[in-house]
Amino acid sequence: MIVGERKPLSEIQEMLKGYKKVMVLGCRTCVAVCMAGGDKEVELLGSLLRIAATKDGSRLEVVEDAVERQCDREYIEPIREKVAACDAVLSMACGCGVQFMAELYADKPVLPAINTNFIGVTESTGVWTERCGQCGNCVLHLTGGICPIARCSKSLLNGPCGGSQNGKCEISPDVDCGWQLIYNRMKQLGQLEKLAEVIPAKDWTTSRDGGPRKIVREDVKI
Amino acid sequence: MEGLGFAPKIVAFCCQYCAYNAADLAGSMRLQYSPYVRIIRLLCTGKIDSLYILKAFEEGADAVFVAG
Image 1 (cartoon, each protein chain N blue to C red):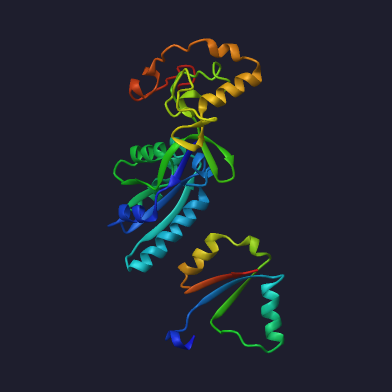
Image 2 (image 1 turned 120 degrees about the vertical axis):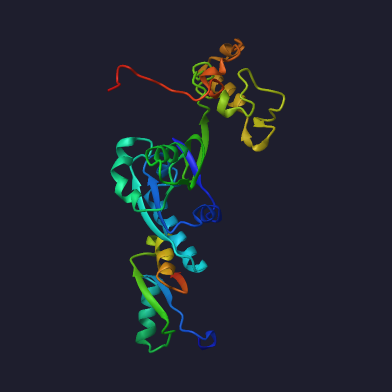
């Protein structure tokens, strides 16, 4: 899922200066799972904003709502009337949701309440970690199901580097060396010999180096 | 509370099995506690939610305490 984190309240308040009626709009998919921008977080932020406005003596009306996904048009179109009644939308979705809302409601300021951090997993309650670098050309079959792009700090395709110490990365003793993890997994699978093969330099045009990406599926297009 | 110069609104979220019973017992024993405290009984303070606390402040509470 996409993992995000709510911006500090002070930053959000700064964004909202000058607006009298704001819609706080949650997204019930990824950011709800990582407890950053779902229904619950909408209610919390709405309440915090109202308390802060009362404290400041400023007038701010906060409307709370959430949709299934802000990255799908069919979910954000039905709230048109509610959006029209507000001065701005404070989206608690990831960066995709904020942009799609801004695209559909071109005459309405759509502001981000969340910092979108990475594609990751829930390791345990309250702990999320990055797993995928979205390079557009998966190599997980070569590396024991552990991504060298996302898990190695240098995104090395042939590691580890000299900064790997006792299974940890040189950037922090709290960060596992991605290539140590790959080695351990390949050993467990009895496939260590595969690591002797050098993975050739990657074509990064499938990643961000190729510019904004797009997928068109003719078979499912309407 | 007199020293505050105003009548504060204090909301107490109390567990019905302990703190709420304690308040009840205080009443039975004719013990006085501040009239500014408004008690809300919870089945368990494990039910407390940050939203309950925020809503209390939003509605004008000057202080909130959770007892359980």
